[in-house]
Image (cartoon, rainbow over all chains, first blue to last red; front, top):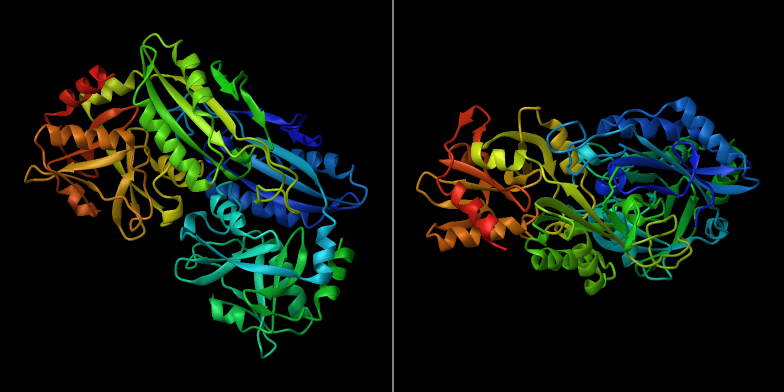
Length: 282
Length: 282
């Protein structure tokens, strides 16, 4: 049971079965770290949420209202928590069309779902110890229209995550052309043998993958700390032959990889510095 | 408001926001025609529902219970109605993994959502008059792992449907290799100039599209009525240059196309016979 959930501003943990978020995955979402009451990088998250609504032509939520509701839940967080925001197209009849047509009954305003979730102790543990990464067989489909933003059609990630052995913390996903794209819940970077940092280029040509907010923060921080960072197509060999591998997302910050397939890796020395930077960057 | 909804056997129109059907589109569904209390082709629909559960590794619903609940709603139907069945993986924590791991809190049993919806008068109208078909620009992504069964990740169909002008009743979708695959909510057939009937081949190589239950019923009926039917890759020109075009699904039965792009088509003469066959086939 989730005690801390607001649906359109009301404290409830249920939504209508007619919601298009359930019927078709017709919505977008963000997962935001909250530290001592403050949602981290909130503006950037809301910016991407809005880009997603625009990509799907979902009416934009009232940002003032959304901010008030997010603050209402975030204010209750003493230490760390995870805040999830979902915006769906709202209620709809039976049928894909969301406008009033012969196929549907009606559509109302968008649905806002804001929920608070516990912060796991494992997050800091893995920041220190590193993780074991597994190569997933589930591939990411090419569809530029659905790439780059966080929508609710996540079966590829669900299937890829289901592949993971219990002793693996994250899985690495490829597209159907064998390009490395991202983790099931994170972006991936490699530290190559020549000390350059590379991360998969994610654009319309790639046609899948999400540019995580933490991905950009990591790129900016690495450049500011005199690393050379490039976005380019990466293959499995680029990852296997790297000096180091690391994964980023808004909740985990940066997790370095200590093993991938049969290889082991040393944790890049900037890992604790970067995660300490996140702790202080409010 | 939907009065006729059963969620796990209880009359309610709400589900938990934690349901993985909402969070990730982690579920499968069927839309079934009900005529005078009888769900049409129920066994075939349930068979595909189970195939979908197996593809996603979702625990199979108890078929006895499911049949009782479907009957409970179908029994109230005097004439025609649409019955929708959704099975989701159930409740889950935050995180794609559905098993108990450091990433999730817990997972309970699958969620069964059975709902009854009004039958539209437009269905029979368009069976008689034919429809206007539009070519959609939204493409279907290649992913054999997610093709062939009805899952809840339907954003491609939502985006394609949103393209349709108000005076178009259905849209035709292609993959990224310009193969014709299906309608947004139906399968497509063409009657070629040499009186043969063709419908897109949908298999692992195609990697998208759903073999509708009505598609197979139409194929069987056409063959029984001495038409030559083949499943093969179709391109836009095959459709444009056809003698006739028709679309099938479990609710609409068979709708012939009277216009597509700038071309007009005559309705194949078997259309009324086939729809009359459906009316009598219980």
